[in-house]
Each structure stands twice: as structure tokens, then as C-alpha cells.
Amino acid sequence: MKNRQIVFVANDVGGIGGMEKHLTELITRVKNDFSITVMASTMKLQDSDGVRFIRIPTPRKPFPVMIVLFSICASIRLLFMKQNLVHTTGAIVFNRVDVSTIHFCHRGYVQTGIGDRDVSKSIFHRINSAISIKMKLWLENFCYRPTRTRRLVAVSSRIKQELSAAYKCPESTVTVIPNGVDVTKFHPVQHLERRKLRGIHGLPEDGTFLLFMGGDWGRKGLQFALQAFNEIAVLHPNVYMVVVGSGNADAFLHFVSEEVRHRVIFAGRQANPEHWYQMSDVFLFPSSYEACSLAVLEAAASGLAMVVTDVGGANDVVEDGVSGYLVRQDVEHIVSRLDMLLRNPEHLNQMRTAVRERVERMTWDAMYHRFRALYEEILLESTQSKKRTETVKAGVRNVERA
Image (cartoon, rainbow, N blue to C red; front, top):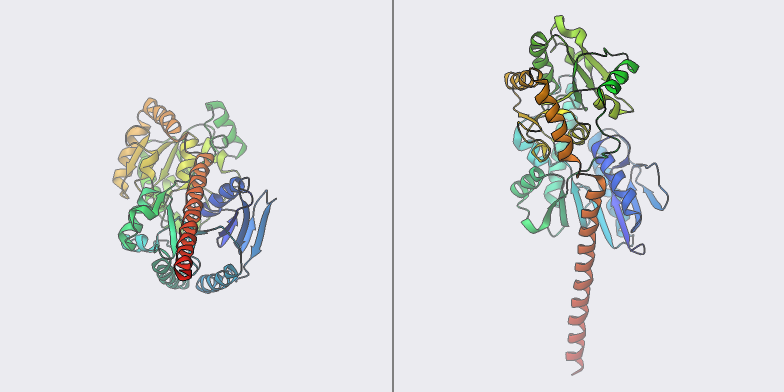
């Protein structure tokens, strides 16, 4: 299959971020079976051997300008490329493409009525976001039609439901292929190793650690996590809250009571997230909207008891009451579930084991096997369609000769 060419089109390939990580893992495997061209503004692959890179130069800000320029330039560049299959990340070009992976359905997000809850964002940032969403909605409406995109790949069943509801996508055109997780990198550790990791990072070695991991803190519900911690910290004096990820810590500190503020650690973005999962006990993630959260998968693979909202495929990982708790974005509901866990250490440890077992089969290799099968199916359909067209043309020519 190496003589067959796949063109991947995305704003960014590689680096930090769920979509970027997904593409890194996918392309690393695809290039062993197909010839690969990446068309993007940036490509940060650790192993780029055998990957042709076509850079689409666009400004990073303002975001609406970047969206327009990238879509126009990439669409024009695609017109002059030979390929067997085009795979995009989201609604990003005007050309007809074969596969598009959908990590975020903007129409579905807007219909939730959540809006921008990040208290740290300026009015200019909010205006910029509003314009960007309008443009994304138009692009989605244009691209997510069978006449424009042959197959849509939703990263969770929720995204598939949103695509079907918002854009009336036929069932046969939408496939669900969840993200994967590196179960060798993200894995549980024994108690002594957990204490050691805490000591290395200057944290208390004893106690129970609640972990929040991610950026975009308003959408991911950090304020609910912090407000719940205020109450659970009074009930359980040995509990700490760790927040890992980029954001404005000062803007969110006002959600934390003065008397427990010393037990909340804003660690910022970390180069080795696996260590922070391994030193923690409970993953607290009351997000309002997710597609298929890598943080949820990584926390599960690391064997953390899960207290998360039922969004973006979380129920594929968390069986409520068995491998964690599915909660509402409600402080009292979160507190009640945390209290149940912390009062019963044996049940907490059982959940840690159960969630690890549940996620062990959700690897990046498993994800790629499903994508490869989809590619082969599309290429076979194209070959058969081409043969049918040639047969029809031959028949017409025979009739004309007669």
C-alpha cells in the first residue's frame, strides 16, 4: 500500500493538544502502510521520516483571519496534488474529501447553551471567539455533507449524535473511532512510588490527591471542582487539590476559601503529565463539554478513581459506581460522590483497578487498525466505482460504434 498516497490536512500536527496528539499517533502508524503528505501550518513530529510536509503559512492571530486564510490556501493547494485519499481534521477545506475526523462539533456545543465561562478571558477574547464560532458553524454546514465529505469519523458516540442531529448526516456516513491511550506510559504505580513522585515535586507525601488536568478551565469546569474542594477539604483534612494545565490561576483562586487555599496547588503545564496522574488518587473533571477527552483516558489508564461529568464518551470508560462516578456540574453532587469515595478507601482502590482494566484495550494501535480498515474500504469503493464508470463508458462507445 506504500504506493498509495494519503494527504492529511490540519491546522497543526504534533505538539500539545488532543487533536495534535491524535494526529501524531495516527500518522506515526499510517506512514508504515501508505505514502504520507501532511498539509498544515506546523508539523512537530518526533519521527517525520517518510512524511512529506507542505506548510500553509498563516498568521496565528487573530484566529478568524487564520481560519479563512488557511481554508483558502489549503483548498487551492489541494487542487494541484495527486492523492488517493484526503483526510482532514474537522471542517477545514472547501474541496471534496474522503475522511474527516471530528473532535469538536461546534453546532453541538452552541446548542448546549454553555457559552464561554472562563472568567479570565477578556472581552476582546470573547468577541474573537464568537466570530470564530460563527465561521466554524458555516464551514461545518458546508463540509459535513455526503457530497463534500465521504466519511465523517466521530471520536465519540456523543459527537456522532450531535452530527446526526445538527447536520442530518446519514447513519452510513458517520463512523465512531475513539481516541486511544498509551497504556505503557500511563499506568498505575505502587504507594511508595507515589510518595516518591510527590516528594520529587515538592508536594506532601501523605494524603489523598484530587487531580484536575487540562486547559480551557471555564469549559472544563474548574470552578465547580474548586468549589467542591472547599467543602470536601473541611470534611477530610488530609485531601489536596492539584491543578495541572495552563490558565490564569489568580482568576480562579477566588473560588477557593482562604482557610483551604494552602491545600490547592496550581502546577501549570507539565512536560511529564504521567507523573502527575501517578502521584494522584482521584481524577476530578466536571467538564461541560468534551468530544473524547485524552485526559480522561490517561487518568483511567493511570488507575485513578474517576469523578467526571458524563460528556464526550466518559461513559465508555466510567461505569457509574464501579469504575468511578458520573456527576452533574453541581457542587453538592460532586461533594457527595467525593465523600463516598474518601470515606471508603477499599472502594476507592477497587475503582482504581476497575477503570484500568476497562481502558486497557483502548490503545492507539487499536484506533489505527480501525482507521486502516476504513481507508481500505474507501479505496476499494473508489476502485469499484471507477471500474463501473469505465464499464459504462465502454458500453456507450460500443453503442455509438453500432
